[in-house]
Structures are given as structure tokens and as C-alpha cells.
Image (cartoon, rainbow, N blue to C red):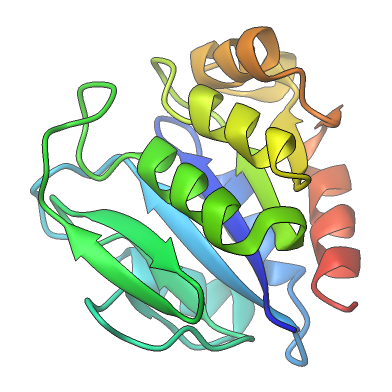
Length: 185
């Protein structure tokens, strides 16, 4: 059965994100969804992540089927929402002052995939991802936060720690190992 890894990143999150996706095995049983705060600006993030991992990486597409072993990136100015088996894009209000935002992804993933979700909050400013991570945990999923002292911008990890009581607060190298194991089940 398909599992979901949902990752939130913003300021200072690109290098940790690349390190984590590099750990995803080519035989992954999970799909990886990434929200990086890029706003309405063009982005080459899928190409950067594909280059780091070798896995297919694309912007999420409204109505597309979710496939294991792929990386899906929230496109500029759109939230990504998950249903069981497929994704949709939303252009609704900004959440936590941003679009795309991690909370809509995390909350929808928790509702659709429950214990088969791993939510991760990396470096960034603000509190995006904190409420969504709390919902992932409440639905039986696994939750991980980057160690704030390792993050270039620690406010997203700190907010997630304060609000969500995550399962683990780890260095990026440790997160990569946990993700690799999760994607191999």
C-alpha cells in the first residue's frame, strides 16, 4: 500500500531537502511531496531534486494519480491537497501567509493516508507545518522536526516542536536514514 512522505521547507531548507531526497531508494514504496515557500515565482525545484535523487521529480498536477517512487513539488502559488490515490491543486487563501503552504498538504495527507504518512518540518521562518504536523500525529502518522540548532531559520521547527509534540527532533542526516527506512517498507 502506498505511503506518503510530506516535507515542509522554507528559508535554509534546500540543502536539507536535497540530502533527504537523496536517501529515498529507487524502489521506494512511498511518494514524496514537497512544499517549499516559493510563492508565485517560477521554480526549478523539481529539477534540483531530481538531480539530487535520480527519482522522477515534477510539479504536482491537478487530478494526477499518486505513484510511489516519485517526488511531487507544490507548484508556484498553489496548495497541494491529497485524496486517496490522487492529488489536487488549490488556489485558495494563503495559509500562514504563504501559498503554497505545508499545512494543507499535511492535513489532507493525514485524512487520506492516516498512519501511512510521515510529516517532516525543516528549516524556515514562521509556523507553517506546525498544525499540519500535529494532525499527522493525531491520525497515527510519524512526525519529525529538524533540530532547530541545525536549521538556518529555526522558527518553523520551533513552532512544530511547540505545537505538535513530534515523534522525533533529529539532525538532517538522521532524518535521511529514517526516511530511507520508511520508504523501504
